Image 1 (tube, rainbow, N blue to C red):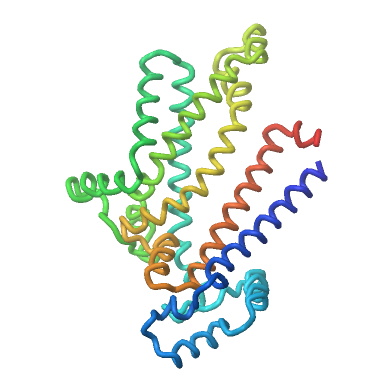
Image 2: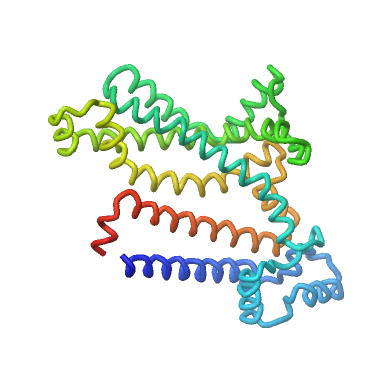
Length: 315
């Protein structure tokens, strides 16, 4: 068990190291002047030289890379060229929108998908099963930004129940802030719920055909007890894998959805940084998202230990 944990931690550190090197090389070392990328080809040479000196582009690449990596350990992510403020402040401010949005979408997708997938598996081949499969096919086919636009037309423009976009801020109260996140969360959650419901159905069907389920039924245990204590617990491993991946996908999907709803989140920050050619923000936020994905995957591995410790104990 200890050896397995050490291997996972070493893999996590190695993945972060390789990812940071790739991001740094792509943005700052490959042929091309980062200062010209940020200021444009018509910028004056003295302006370019001043920017290189200000952001450290005149230093050797290895020195810049080591300084950048060391800064992550102390929370020093550099300063945005566009906004002229520390990147850590920008990220912290935008996370106050993106994190609640991602958690809301994740919770909604999970609460919808697991009951639907279980319902479909328990009624295999019947009308309920076909209905859930139709929902999953439709959800996987429709992009989240289209769902967001449709939600704006129906619930904001047509019915006037929810705001069409923007974010009032948490300082204006939880009610207006949560209302502004409802439609974006729905747009993010429905495609993920469609995928997760399909995986849940397959996992539950596989568990229903296992020998331990037949044994539990032979001992007289009711269907509810068999489902909750035997079927769902053994179906959790593939479901947990997908849920971990989905939570990271929600961050990537938020780039599009936050722009559809004009939400000042991390995804919109990345989009604006790319448009404004702010390489410092692009580099730092990309690395933060990669680190988050790696850490979430590590957390999923830890959940496996709680669900079924036998493979890790054997390792």
